[in-house]
Length: 155
Length: 298
Image 1 (cartoon, chains in turn red, cyan):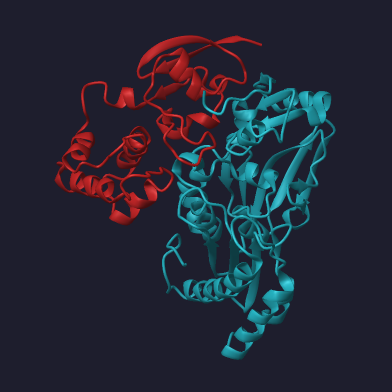
Image 2: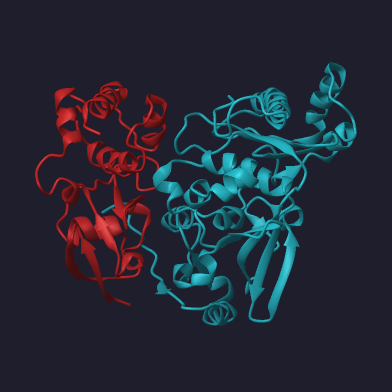
């Protein structure tokens, strides 16, 4: 049965009609026009559909849109609402991505992680993105950018 | 469209247990309980599950409780693996469970996946199995007719099969504190440190007074305690020959199969290596030495 849900998407209240079997990823992309979360594997393995629900990273391909009724959803679009984040600038500096398909998930996952753990070790960074697959870079420039950012940012 | 769900179902988010058990008694096997959905949604996408109704239990506050009264830890049905990892109570009092929780998939999965969901899925590779079996956890099952408690050692009946009846749900898990000074280790073999399921999982808890508890996952139809090894070791101080004898018993305890992730020969070989590491690490940790909990042991 179709129903109306309301979510706070990237700080903005949005309402949308969904079926119970509509996935959050599809609703974000096709009904709400936010194309930053990508469809990779569709089974929670690759991480490119990662978004934040109430500040926690989740796989939007494994969540029904009805489940997030009344909750806050943040995508990469919300994270870089006011221009590129500092971390994104470091990704550019280190040419961290090639095709870029994994980038939205990486950035969202790292946004949550670096808030929780502002001074991580390289090992902890690797663990934090272990659920985000990248098939171009071998992860090296991604990890290098994160470590450079951690080293250089104030505080 | 992202691996859309073609199967259609209804969705209800009950506010309390009464409403939930009412729905279960009405829909029985046609209803499925949804909390994290990290397993269930994939199963529905793949066509292995086709419920008429999904009952989202995240609106029931008492299922979100994680509490410790010095004797027992209560883990409500909606408690996620990351909530367990972020809890100092769990880390300090049930470090083996904490270490097992850390080995589950990756952050974004652990933010949704629940421990209770893990035992209800009852796959042989469940990471929470060995720790819960070793701590002798009790599973609280509820239905419209009341409540019953099942020891985790009797909970699993086969791959993806449990004692859960069609109108019952798992309310939570009670984990008694082992009381004595102890050290534990959970060693997991996977292909990479991300989403991978265990190919072999071995948990060991050593308690003061030469008490040993050993359990495994992914190397038999159900995750289970290794009673023959425990019986051999209990009451004895470890030495090299006892160690070798215990390692030999692994072959009698487990029955690994060959599947897409590993061969049975490889699993058997690794189970012995991992048992050795787990046991040595557990002894070291009991004595305040060895690697920190959560550090990779393989």
